[in-house]
Image (tube, rainbow, N blue to C red; front, top):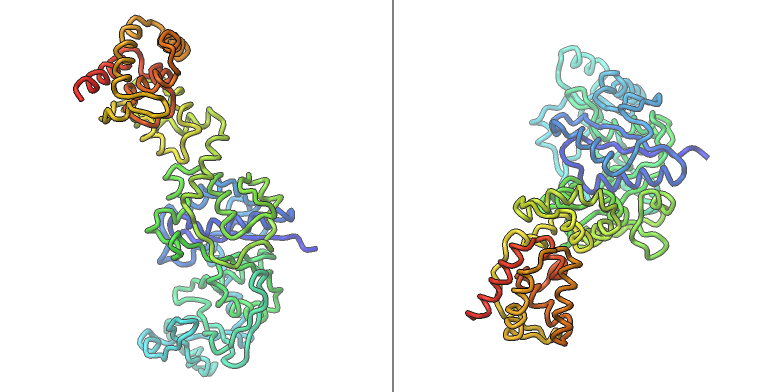
Length: 486
């Protein structure tokens, strides 16, 4: 069998869209599952859409997601250059366009903007498009040469038939037949000498021996035109895998407005790259089991592209956050601490507290890193709270019993020198035993007083250990004052 070769060929036009990242991931997994090669190529022929710095974004995204490529601009294995603008300079596309002209499969078009604007439009797949009328195909060889000598601007168009049908096979969608009347004579070489995406793609995929082409299903309608190019050259047609659309929660196309349309957008929201990879793998593909958490190596073993679904996939941000939380729980503490530290410092206003203990409190209680801020911000400033919080049926506490407990415990804690969690806990347990009550009867009012919250990431004594003696006593006095003046 021929070695599988898949390519990821993004355009440097900004941040990497989730759909592009999924294509890259699936291409990587298809190749690696079969022991094949993953090729990285940069398609920068659309100079108008080029964004400065976007190439670096692509490199960084591949690095962060662990999609290590076997060949690329910095890893030439004999198929380079791997940047299309460099291939333009090498004359690769011009050479193949000329070959098509000589075969009658392409032709020079000298029509100006005014003439093109006046062409009739047709509705194809619900869209109104302008179909070129092959006007310049009728020019004689002499007329073409004269216009070329005169320096009249031109493009090179594909010469597609207007009658009959063209069929192709897709691994997910099966056999598809398209009426040739829908095939416009698409431009292969633009007036600036650069190839269009459609033409460069076909030429490069053939020359780089790409066996499997993975892309969004919006390219299904263009595939017959690509196949006619392959056939015109006498080249082998690759295996096609067209992926379903990714939508937002409202089943609309994922856009920048969603706030999570690109890899960088999602990372900036506190999501781990490995969680993003895991989540995106499941946007359209499902394993044989109900399992949802996969490392990249596990995905390589499991991935079978025949299990990709044709239906649109919903990008569920809540599901991604849940998955991210699972990754955070399983994360090495030192790595977690390093990533959590900026959020911890922001949450507590930079106060000199025990940040590692705060990180331990947060690690199993957050889904994304920004969750740390509201979780522990009470360590910075005691929030305003209503004394009704002291009443708890399960703990059998009321505002009156809570006031009694806080008044009793205050002088004991004032005498306490050791403010470690264990020492404080033993002190409170001694008071519990003396009073003959349950733990919660004492712990609930103390925790309420030192936190001002109903839900906290730690118990009363753990909170007091981090706050320290002075702040803990100040908050308990505040609780007594509130209860006395209610």
